[in-house]
Image 1 (cartoon, rainbow, N blue to C red):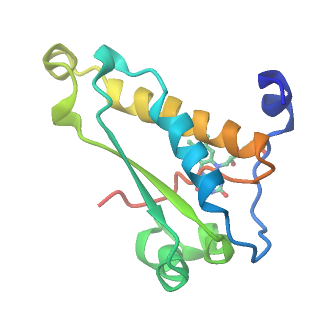
Image 2: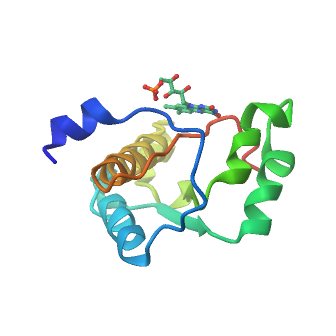
Length: 133
Ligand SMILES: Cc1cc2nc3c(=O)[nH]c(=O)nc-3n(C[C@H](O)[C@H](O)[C@H](O)COP(=O)(O)O)c2cc1C
């Protein structure tokens, strides 16, 4: 698939088949994230893969901001990738001047992953309505 095709095809998917995602495909998605550019090449990110069914079912209740119904559809997802960052690993000038480069970096990496998932025929959806703590 051409990059533009993946961009054109991608849409938010909130209904999932029970089919598991093959390890080979997951590794390719993570690799797409790992290869993303980052400010000063700090790669101040961590990707946490949650594939435990019981844990995934708890996510809407545990992490939502407001009502858990906003993200209740997550419970049927076979896989969740949590994009985390460590602000302290970013360039000191970014920290000094309050540049939120870590947010830009993680967003680019997640977009790489979403587009790679699209190429592999896997639907996904960003989730922002979460309590980071
Ligand atoms: C940063 C970000 C956070 C988002 N958070 C949520 C969310 O918490 N729940 C949800 O259902 N969709 C969420 N979305 C998906 C958007 O609602 C969706 O991308 C938008 O409506 C456009 O639709 P499309 O992705 O099908 O093109 C989020 C999208 C982005 C980029």
